[in-house]
Length: 240
Image 1 (spheres, rainbow, N blue to C red):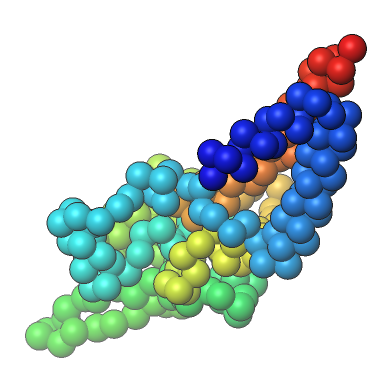
Image 2: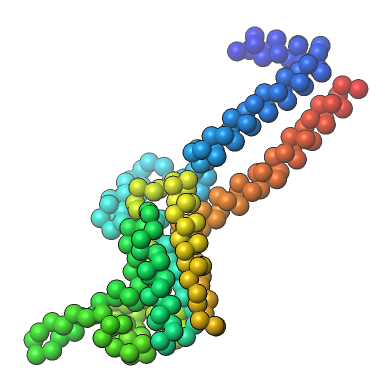
């Protein structure tokens, strides 16, 4: 290897113009091949914080066992609907959002007020019901907020925000597999007409992972050509 590098160094010193042309040609070919592969298969590497800092070890093995038992938090996307949700229009918006998300390819399940179940006892009997189906919108929110398991989980304390929790299929671990599902969820959710004064927000680990990688790719598309151009200018300047 040292012999090859030494020969290349001598060639670059003796024939700088040819060396520059070869470097630029190889760079263009590599960029073209990389672009085709990324367009076809997505980014080949996962540059998220989880991928950068997670490796083997007892803590990682324990986390893997927990994920097998309870599922991956990395695949839980949350949509927050803010506004007057304790009205007929608010409940209609929740139902429409739930229906739009549940059949998306890659979505395992959706949990919201639409399928929230409460248990109550009466004369020794256990009663199971869905508050939105058996109570008025305002009463349903009050009942859900009073439940110790759902308090501030499905409905905020002031009753102005409700959550729709979307679980994405567990085998979609890489950002390249997550991104199409996240994009489709966002597209379908934003297509749902919301009453005036209501707003929709996205949160959760998969949303952040996809957003961070998108920002990194955009930055690289801007700065890598700039750095490459500066590098080429420096090499051309050395020819004088």
